[in-house]
Length: 101
Length: 407
Ligand code: SF4
Ligand code: SF4
Figure 1 (cartoon, each protein chain N blue to C red):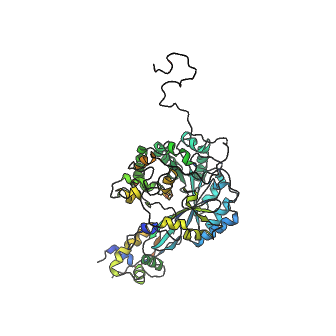
Figure 2: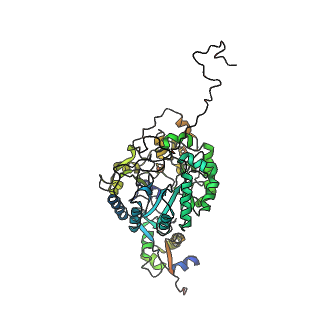
Figure 3: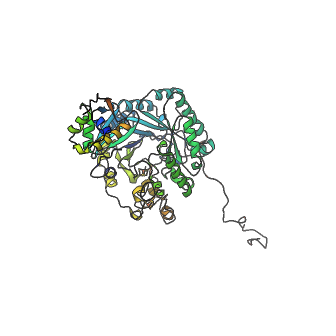
């Protein structure tokens, strides 16, 4: 179902970049990166919950599960997380060993 | 941007207003060393009621509580406030990043080094032409040299990615490539913004705002340069040059954010819907008298009105409405056009026809221009011939029998 690239991300450990702050808004949150001065919108509250949960979760898979995201939506969420990573809002902390499943 | 979205669109959320502004401008003083012909805030003289250092610190504390991530500081010329550098430090130390606009007058080598060593600060140097001739006509003699000297100090100090901020006028549209080259030379990013008839701009807008064909030049140039040039989202009315499906829209928020995501705190603490709308009609309250900025932002009647559904009048039936949204509220207001109609620079030409009808331009309600002309003040008036005259006017005591007859 999910493509390989997606599964890879699921096993990695990601976190909020230290110089990024989230500001809650009715739709979700604004994310601001004080270093590169980029402003991004997290368009749903669930995405905000996932992003906030990244730091605590051992890997992206657990963060999605903890955020209550249905498994069929994971590819969309992984894409959203990759977008956030493209502007350094979040980043992989350490690539997991990737034993495969 | 993320693709995960349900319910109201982001745009709709913005229209209803956010808990705190995204684009907050704070003008620290009305005092300025220059007297630019198009100054949006009619600056010149300091206002004796300007916020004290302590009052400014309280505003910053409040911005920190509201998580306003950064503030655009301007003026007047903000750096001529003696406590400017202190306030800059104070803001950064309180997680409020600072972008400030300056004409460069106080950016010497030492200050450039200080700026280069401070995180979370962005500097925007104003320049309205790629040559001294074009720039100084609007901003005053010597202002080109001042700006370039400041940019040189910033570059030499290792300040990364300063901005060169240009207000696009009839006189500099032809210089866009040159301006870009200038920015590249200084390791800076070019930022182009729209000339609006705000402040003293109202007096020169007719003569300086880009002609219709030049608007097209700006649009094409922006499309060609994409994200490599900043615009502060100020040209969204030009998106209507693109196809009606909106695919030619310029990057950014395509809506007027006044009072919704945009606002201004002026030097005396008055809160206006937008930095280009310093007028009693757009005054929401005062940070000192009305219980602080957050309260004004969240509870003022004016902002509630701006966030409620707006009618779009003649624009409703326009196929470009989704990307243009009727353009800029301030531009309409200060040219005396109805707020629920086309922008004066509507690319469909509706603005021009609206401008040629009966209209009353509102009188300014705030003006800190210096009362008498100062040395080096730009004068945009030119002596020209009346085009309808073919011969000298007829004097009352002309004796020639052929007087008044055309030869
Ligand atoms: S009034 Fe004009 S300048 Fe102000 S936010 Fe609206 S479109 Fe922008
Ligand atoms: S008619 Fe209104 S919406 Fe259409 S292009 Fe003109 S200003 Fe924009």
